[in-house]
Image 1 (cartoon, one colour):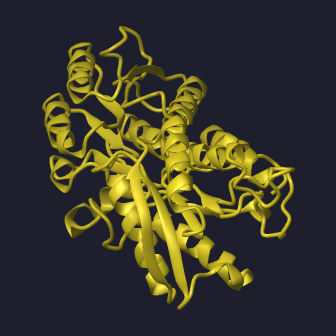
Image 2: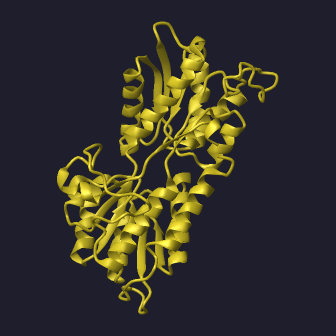
Image 3: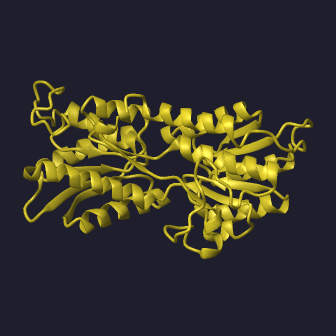
Length: 367
């Protein structure tokens, strides 16, 4: 695609909004004193690129739909987010789009919202099964994280098939893993999906080192500095669990001249699609990540669709507010899943509340 990937998706989302679900309906005036629908958005941490992009698209959707959006940053604190929820409920807000700080808090959130006859759609951090069982007006609008890891493995498989000389003996992937926040559902499931994906494709996986960089570029760069000093020549692949960390790792490689040509760090000497000696694969496909791929720095990434997730969540709440329920509806072009998979889509009783936005492979060819 010649157009920026996220811009293209945003355009599709806007067309969907203009043509479909925003074509009218009853409004909830309880929170604003007017006939305008009011929606709350509880966003766990606006400092992360994916989350910021999600919130920005959510605001655009609300503006185009004539919805008053009360968007609050939880600053990575569960107590703050619960306080914000209670404040909005006190103001009469009933419909919520939520990127929660912690899965463990989502059942309590749903109970508080349900007591006021409200509804919520959760993205990015998964709600618990118990949270969705609080009522049929609670939804998942997110992407199954094991799939992101598996797509990283798919990209690595394609790379090694094209460049078999880069593999270790006995078909071995000597892997560095830069984890996100430890215990975060994405951290756990992306890691498992990546390892399982490599092994399913016939590779022996040797984890040379792994550590958290807490989703941050600077922390990832410092981590890679240390790893280059300790493990140079011992690894042939780097998986980072988001683009910010992947680009931090790449910046470390450039700074330390861990590149095809130390005298010209812009040269992809061996033609493998990256100027670094070892490919780095991220997750999110942020605009900065896409640009890094175009410049032959980060090798590839996996699109976690901020536009798709926020559009799906927003439309689920708009449909619920205007029609009473989104069960059986299509939101953001997505229908509810019919297959058991990753939590919370593991209980048949709530599959009709789980709207899974697909991850997508993003290599230079895809851009």
